[in-house]
Image (cartoon, protein in one colour):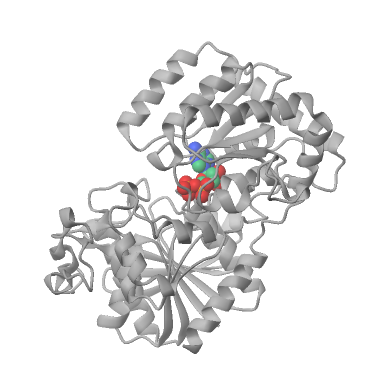
Length: 490
Ligand code: ADP
């Protein structure tokens, strides 16, 4: 099959969160399964072809395509990346970051349309056009309404239904669609009565794609329920629920591997004895001790590597941090917030804990530190309000770190509580709580701390078990392939 992804992220060269990792992991595995995979990505200012060649072994060559746009072809053994560079006067991709600009809607509408123009010029038959999230959802509409491209079927993956791309009807005029004609319930009009004057790009993707999937089975069910952070999208999702399924994400085993992780001083793997694994984790702690003056501690190191946004439950992250430290544990938080009021609040929290050697609050996006923290922690704390899949709990387990999670979405599908009688004992891999409340969260932290300090043998056998778990892309990629196959046969 020939599969073309349209994506705004690709790890590690353009990553804002889980999406970038999903694209790279899924593409590599589909290639391993014998499929032809291409990924079209904006060529952001911070992507340097020379370092891609040097560090990632990409062969890069330039293909001029049309006025204002250049497509760069970057190929490795694993996949083919097509990087769209534009000299549009608005400098759409010459920015420091991937998202967060007032013209994001126009930037990504432009990207989607230019990518399709490229595919149309190329005239090569495509089995699946695979779209990811609201920024490229409009491509499903354009394929049906504007372009003649030999594409058999279009799949939209919703990595996060809370981000929907609301815009004015006239924004679509910029890419040559008559916006006002699409402002209807059947097409792109937002489902919420408060926003009926606006277009919803994610809704357009759901309506016009041949199939839609989300990134875990539980989240695929949860998005059908009304929830404030999803606005009214459940209305469209229910209307099209027969074309919606859930496929759990994997993690890229090359990007996340304590056996060869370039950021770790001491490597380890599931093949080592538990004593060696814990010793290597101890060394990872020492590295951080030296770097940040964190206290040595016989009580567990708990922490989080996360964007600090509503989805991730900033209130419970703070309460968890305070409670863990009150109990004598260490707590390490790596992450920052794009929301100034949340970030401001956390800046005060950092000041409060500045002199406390048990706490580290580090507000940056730092890939190297993330790897070191996953290795050093004993428990990763993920109290999310909702979680489409969540990669951090999967990464943590690969590094022998036990997840403590709120049971929602992908966390519900991957974290099984140590005391959950409905799960076989050897499948229990962490601690979880149902409701987003302080008491349940604190009880769960208490249970985890007790497990670590008082039930050493069980704790060690859980570490040995989770580090062996296979969260690779092998299984999910086969599920995607099956979905693609059913789609082209329809
Ligand atoms: P989401 O995509 O909702 O942000 P996921 O758990 O699916 O959450 O994926 C988050 C990814 O981003 C993980 O690989 C995590 O390690 C990484 N990450 C989050 N915050 C940071 C940070 N501050 N520095 C480095 N990596 C981070």
